[in-house]
Length: 241
Image (tube, rainbow, N blue to C red; front, side, top):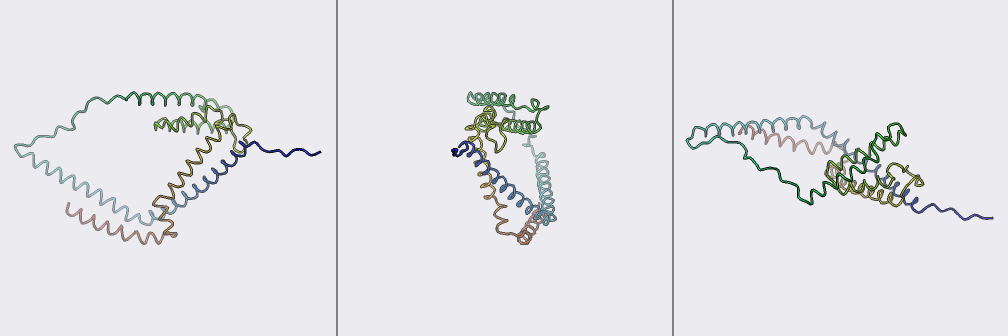
C-alpha cells in the first residue's frame, strides 16, 4: 500500500525561502561593510599626519578669523553710532502641535504601550535565555522607533508583536507560528529593507573607491598629493587671516 507524498505547508516553504534570502543578504551586507571598513581604516591610518595637519590648520584659521572679527567689533565701539549687541531676539512661546500631529503622537504612544507590555524583558527574566534576549532586542527596537517618531515602522513592529510571532517563532520551525501569514509579511518587509540597505551601500562613495582601487595603496598614493595641496592652500589662508 502506497502512502500519498507529504507536502509541506506552503506558508512554511515561503517562510524558509524568505529566511534563506535574509540570511544571504545579511552575509553579503556584513562582508561588504567589513571590507569597506578595513579599506577606510588603512587609508585613514596612512594619511593620519595629513588629516591631523588639516584639522589643526582649520581650527587655527577659524580662531584667527574670529579674533579679527572681534577686533573690528571693538574698533566700532569707538564710533558714536555704535550700539552694544543685545543678543538674540526673544522668540514667542513654542508652537503647539497641530491636531494631526497630536493624533500621530497619541497613536505612537498607544502602539508603543500595547507592544512593550507584551515583550518587556522583565516578563522573561526567569525564563528561556533566548526569549529574554529576543525580548530585550525587540524592546530596544520599539524604543528606537518611538524616539524617532517613525509611526509607519512602529506600526509594523506592533503588528508583528501582537500577532504572537515575535516571541514564538524559531527560525526554520514554522509550526511554532501563531500567525504564519503575518510572519510572511514581516519577513518580506525585513528582506526588502535589507535589499535597500545593500543597494545604498553599493551606491556609496567608498564602494566605488574600493572597486576602482582594489589595493588601498594605489588610492592612498592618489589621495596624498591632494591632501598636501589642501594643506598648502589652507596654510596661505591662515597667514593672511
